[in-house]
Image (tube, rainbow, N blue to C red; front, side, top):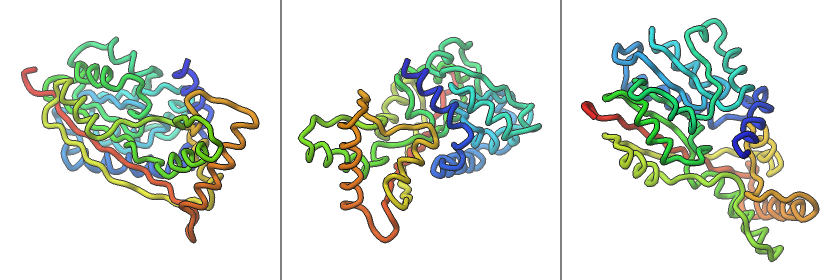
Length: 277
């Protein structure tokens, strides 16, 4: 049910996603540049590429044309996003195969040792079973194949979470987590190690954006199909009071001449399935 809601939200926001996905666009560009530096375009060893969570095709457009004659499969859970990706790529998208599926189920339905390269940008934070899915991706890769992904770390939106905590304290209410819970870089490294990957590299960096006010920030989050609602969503007057107190705490604690800051922790991971395994 949760996955169905995520699919609907992202489909509904497919037309506005690129307008607000500033950091996601930067992540895709950095991931593509790193791939090109490590793996020359049209490398003969790359015959089959799988992109997990292609969204509107930002990373797809950067990579698919550089993969020569390789078969490129772009996967997403939201039909609206896949349609936006098809439009974005236009005639060049004819070399891609777009697949509507939930990777956490799809990966276990595929033949083993099929893919040479698996890539993903700004998607893995949505996985409900990240460790099991990483194991499935390892199974999908041929020996010598590579996994490259970019996702968000737990310091993402720390100002927002700090402000919600202050609001809960002021209202003397039991605090709840708002939005996603992110795996740490060490957790990703451990999951990749346990799955059997070799040469695991994980690095992080932070990006800070500024918005005129908290409402503008929340509007941008909704514009990409994400949410800052609590895990057990409650509507009505109590929720409105909580949001009002959170926005006041955010403004008073972090606001300045540039507006309000928003931190994103970007996590980049790379690993290979060893030869002979």
